[in-house]
Length: 511
Image (cartoon, rainbow, N blue to C red; front, side):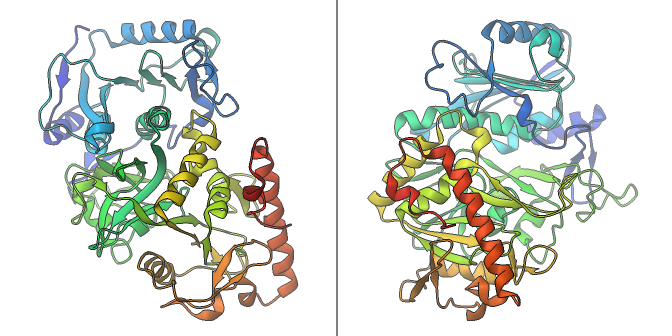
């Protein structure tokens, strides 16, 4: 590569380069605003795993698309040719706050703003050791577009992971989240082999050292609820659970911005400052003020910033074994209890289910809420069988006596369009009660359809909303909708019946 290559520039230098190159513009708060063009989110159909002999028997090919080693080498050499005489930006960092369970990662970027993104999202070394080969390398060239007929890709965009060569190739898409999730996929491959559970969750810790984990798909409140001013943030998205405890895989946060308000999410709001990267957020051309309510580019507006932009972040992001785990779901059917306690078998069932719902109007053709299931709350990032992660979870829950709760941040009093979204203040009260042990002396009753234990009272929450059937005017309509959702759970869980213990199958909803 004979072009101008920049190694490990500071955020200020990268911001300067991005502006010089016309990649973005400064907002009024100092954050760098960029747009990602055609791709404003991940492209799961364009993600592949190289099917080499060394990894063939390890990969779950039901959930991962194979890619030919020969085609991979072809794309790789074409990308090397594309890089000749181009300005490139290189960042050397780590994935894994636990020094004993981290990997070194090198990112090669075509754009300065994307190099700033990985600088802020991954763990920044105090000093960089020159000429030390990284454990994994990511080459991200959005301007390089694949030729599907020649390269074997599905489109011009591609994300190809080669676990044998420890190399990730990304091209054709400007969406920076592909880099973040590629390394998460790598960690999901590496950590279970060391008996470490890799998890798509946020985490925080209280003054007494009581660690809490928050699992949930996009839009369920995982980032919002973990950013608690009374607790220290470990991380907002990806963690490992080893024999020593919890550790953050990343060094930054990647929060959704749509509808962001200072009064409801002050920590995220105040993190949007110099060094942060705003993706696809509309800004006023004169004042440079962001309009977080404007979804004209995409609903998936994002901000990336270092975790230490959160005032009470825990650095390094390492803590003890979790006392409490919260599974978050945004149930648009309006039938799941706002909060329920799960035993170990129920926890494994709901972990494997990974349920939330898509809303009417968010995608073309969706006119009613649709159930969405994503195994382990992160199916697109699991190279191994989902059962492997669930088994690790079950082992650790029992060994450390961790409490697990299912919390519904979705609808109450009716489904989407009829009922209302659960008040954030109620959800926060439920989370607090679960984490601080306020429900330990409360009586529970079994939900007859969803087969989970619902508290009869919860501090800060009206008793009448705890059993969702009570909030529906039309009780028969509730029964019908609840049984409909229960049947969807059962149908989805058919995917896991092979070699599944009967007690886990019995822990799910009853149709």
